[in-house]
Image (cartoon, rainbow, N blue to C red; front, side):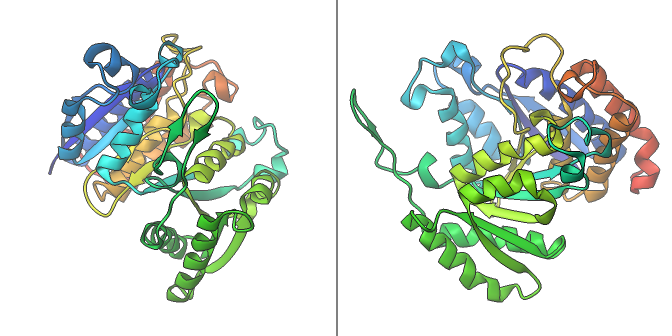
Length: 359
């Protein structure tokens, strides 16, 4: 089996964590007799500097032709003054839209060793295992019209029933494969788009009789997420709410650096990235946590390459490293980015047999 993976390291700590993720990707692929071609391209601030745009045509064409895309992070103070289509974030939004990856999966699991590291009580976070399914290509981030002048600004939130149905179907299906509980988050007491969201998801529930559905308003849910997170299994919500809530959920795991994500569409390559930003304050210092990027590679094997046993081997290797105290500064340790990445690579061979993977 031969696959092509395009990497878009981006800015800040993006290149540092992507290097470690690619190292894991290569070893894991070789252990499963997968011939992987890795091709690197520009996105974000560095793309602006070198090509004059945050998403060069060459990068987009390569991503669309790939089997999977691995992204680092985009943005930084150097480019914060830019606006409109020149914003670094415009490159990321353009990539998501072009790849039509409408469902963003953000799993949150709390490692037992990190229970004491979070700012929340151990009894609150112990055993947390949830997935946020965020609608990724609609809502306020893409709605038209958009307008700004010196005194006013307008953003538009727009959703169609079809857009809601397709992401809800992903969430319902995921819930059937997990613990059978789905929470749909909206603001139906204020927003018309949320009224449509709630009505659509409620109607679909009859198709999934084994799934227990409940609805929550985003403001009260934000509190529930950090006070009773063990109640949650699968959470589905719209684009902006999902962005905010999944970042909030990082407090459960101890750090943004721990959380991976997978962005999936009906066809074409999936997009995989850690949910953290570029962290310019530590960029270039070999201090960033690479585990979120590495766990994104696990999701790549699970969803784009249909190799769940390889994904499980990578996840087990990360767990082993945390068990053995290979912790970066954000999760209470002193390990460097490169040391953490090397530790995961070293942990992979011992896990091949247990994962059902042979050399």
